[in-house]
Every structure is written in C-alpha cells, then in structure tokens.
Image (cartoon, rainbow, N blue to C red; front, side):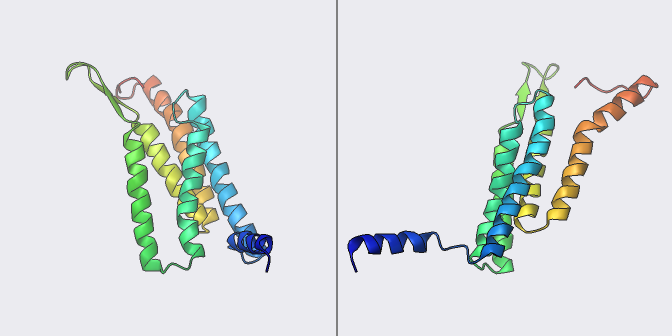
Length: 171
C-alpha cells in the first residue's frame, strides 16, 4: 500500500464515527434544535439589552447537547451518563456565577445584578441537554415556558403594580 493510500484510509476512518444516514440525521436535528432554542431565548435577552444574548445562549445550548450526545454515541452506560450531566451542570453553574455582579459601596446601596441572566443560561443548558438526549418535545415546551417567564412575567408584575399591588424594587 502506498503512503497516500494509507493517509486517505486513515482520514476516512477518522470521519467514520457516524454509522448511517439515520444517525447523522439524529445528530444534525439535535444540535440544530439546541441552537435554535438557544437562539430564541438569547434573542429575547438581547432585545432586553442583556449581556448574554443570542450567541451566548446558542453556544451554551449546543455545547450542552454535544456534551451528552458524544457519550451516547460511544455507548456510555446510564449510570455514567449521570456523572456527565452532573459535571455539565456544575460547569454551567460556574459560567453562570460569572454573570452575577454585586454593585454598590455599602450595604444600603448594594444591588445584585445578573441573577436572571445566570438562571437563563442555566435553563438554556438544561434545554440543550434535553435536545442532546433526544427529548425534543421536553426541550421545546421548556423553551416556551422559559420564554413566557422572561417576556410575560415582567408585564404581569407591572400590571399588578398599577392596580395597587405591593411595591417592589425597580428592575
């Protein structure tokens, strides 16, 4: 065998991790759906002027899907998948912690900002995991619920304030 045939065979074997068209379709669907759902949540946050927008949410969702999809492809046993998920949740928690800021000089003036951003990224990671695990309906429903919380709850709170509800700090 000539050296270039060896190189060609090696390259072909390196790209042979997808066994058939059905598996390729499954991978493309799961990763694309994760990205699309991350886009939806990120679009809402970006529209509100938040730092973590479309690209951040998309990358968190796709990354989370990939972190659970790859072990599935390699035949990981369910008990080991729980450890993958635990690591992913902890890692995303670390990322989210970086979005939380405490501002102000003394106890009277201090405000905590970024909690909703952190929670949104955490939720986006969970939605990405659902996509990666093949739970597309759960991911879609969770995205709709998260979008309702982010987009509708502030309006409901404002309506309650207008009719004389309890005072709350400004957002």
